[in-house]
Structures are given as structure tokens and as C-alpha cells.
Image (cartoon, rainbow over all chains, first blue to last red; front, top):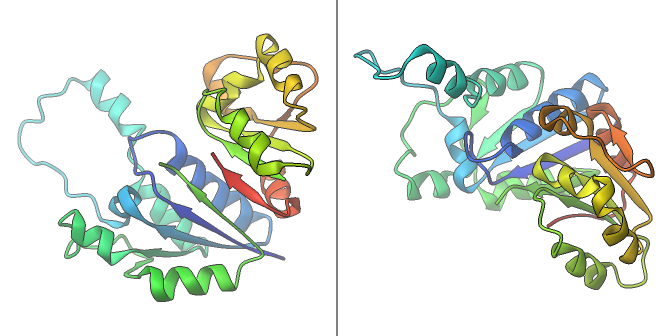
Length: 131
Length: 92
């Protein structure tokens, strides 16, 4: 059994890399490995609970269905429930004005100095994804 | 040395050459980088003396393309193995 860390710097709807990281993590966990995910830069938005708009959305069903393919909150929640350790960088959240937003269950506030450093020092493999 | 490519920008192969120097070079192509695995790009990749090319199966399927015969289409399970086997992994 190995421990793998991904430092993710791409957010949802930006490209496919956030989804790749989540699928990679789920597969690693199924394979009996440990998986850490550090949400850095634009990826820090993946830490937050969705806040649905309750008024008229102004999108037809076709567009809504397409946009739903880019929303990853449920996958983040599932990954945490499967045992992934997920931390954010609170400084990059601060820079985006989201530091006080509610986290998805299983996601923890973190930082480069302790969270990411601990992840890297305890991992057998680690890589950065996104940008 | 394992390089993780995420875009279809073939110019990064020059960076791969510089970073790998005399080490073996393996590519893991995910997302839009799977376009580099097409037969039309085989000669370009060969000119950079790439030893192995692994191509994300799901990204190929999403785009409806096939990799050149010499390259290996890989599942996510295999990608996890490749990452763990790689001594160094660099995303470009």
C-alpha cells in the first residue's frame, strides 16, 4: 500500500484536470492506497459547498445538463467519504474571497506550511496537476 | 523519467528533452494531450526518442480518437500503477 498526493491547481469547469484528480484518487483508494488531495490556487473553490440559486435560472435544460457535467461537489464529497484526506490552502481562498465559505463534508482548512508539507513528507508519490 | 502532459502542445517535447537529459523518457498523456498520441504525431514523438507513451483511455474515448499502434491506452487503474512505478513525475 502506498500513499499518493496530488496538489491540484485547476478548478472545476476550467479543464478536465480536477475531474481527473478526483477519479485518480477514487481509483487509488479502491486499489488499497492512501490518497491526499491538496486544493491550491483555483482548485480551492472545490472545497466549498454549493449554494444553489433559488430564482429563475435563465438556462434551458440542455444547457443545465451540460453545466452539471462540470460540477464536482458530489465527487469531492464521495472521495472524502471513501477515505481521501482533502485539505485546502486558506491563503488562496483568502485571495478569492472564499475563506469563510462552508466546506464540503470531509474537506479541511489547511495551508502549504503544514498540510502540504506533511502530505509531501509522508507520500510515496506526489505530483502537481493543473495550471 | 515520467512526464505528465495535459495539453496538445507538442512544443513541450523540447522541454522534455532538456529535463530528461540522458535519462529514459516516458510520457503519460491525459486530457487534451491524448491528441499527441495520434498516428500523425508518431514521427514527431519518435524524433524525441520517447521510450514509452501511455495514453488515458477515458480521454481517448471522450474525443473518439485512437492512439498510434506503438502506444499503450491505459485505464485509471494502470495510471495509478504507472505513477507509483515512476521515480520522477513532472507535469508539463
